[in-house]
Image (tube, rainbow, N blue to C red; front, side, top):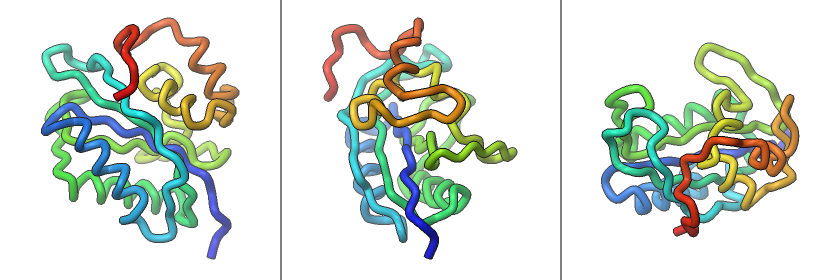
Length: 166
């Protein structure tokens, strides 16, 4: 068995009771992926859509998992969970029942057509960095620095001001 790796997962939903969809996905992260265990999950946060504005607000969270799977195997399992939960991609950055993004995989830098780690947009999204900073502020984003520093460097926000986690 390979050595365990700490991976960060971003979760988001804005359809079919989004908070419940994110909670359901968090449960699945901890119970439905072989050789993987849920270490920690953030609170749920409400954000404005980053893509088309004519869609509902999102509920977002982040989770840390410890896995013995490769990054590609973990991605396949995340996509399997999305499908089981009913994900249909309507349009780019559009509404969805659930979205599970592999944000970080240890200290690996991966650049494949179907998988990029660190996630290429994570450092521009407060709805990713704030929940991740809640559970792992000192985690390092390869090539960038600590999560908390990336969050402090943001000048654009999608999270609602003064919005407390759900």
